[in-house]
Image (cartoon, rainbow, N blue to C red; front, side, top):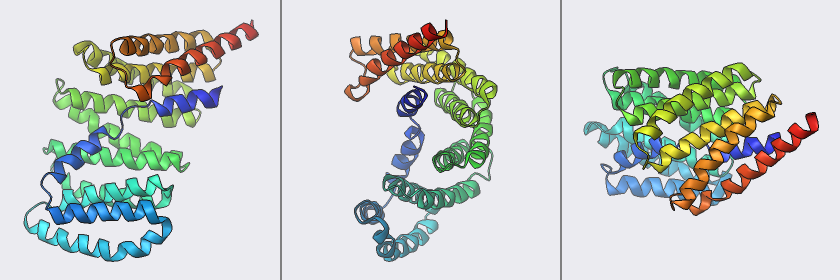
Length: 290
């Protein structure tokens, strides 16, 4: 039961790529066609050829770096390279190469750290937080909980400052709620139940505020679902089944409402049955403990 709940929580977790994709799209809109062709070929090679692709990628990487020198003269090298490394990291993840993904995300992080030297550049600061988050994700998948915790904490510190600088910035607030949930994930896996509950509660508080501010935002509603599921997971592991049921039921209410309003994508509709199953399992466990 615990494994099933964990998979559900990870499957319907926050849209962690949303911020990075926005950055990539923003950067790509300014990239020359040649650079985009190189990036597409790099990703396609890695996806199709697996480990053999590393040898084939050498001339492509050389061309990419050479082109970056031209972009450097245009003042666009840093973000272009960062996005390129992000894409290569994603391609590595898709073929199960966690070590390769870690290397690429670390390179993107180094670039973003240099670009964020100016604390007044909010976009550069957000990009840096995203790089820390991406690196933390792959570190956690690799079983490096301590390293992931450090990356998530650095990400959180940046996002706390960004949210404090503009409390009306919905994106900054959502980023912050995602960071609290990420921190809670690694704390929960490390057995720090009390700390995980605290982190998830902070994420929930922000998600409630955003969902109330814009009821038409389906993503904000799903963020509430994510928070409810994560809190339910912690209570379930602690054998606090009644509390877990309460959280899962709140998640179920939102999912059913979104489906009824035709705002729940078909790929996410199985979450309803999964939530119902988890509630039933908790109820069975509760009955057996009486």
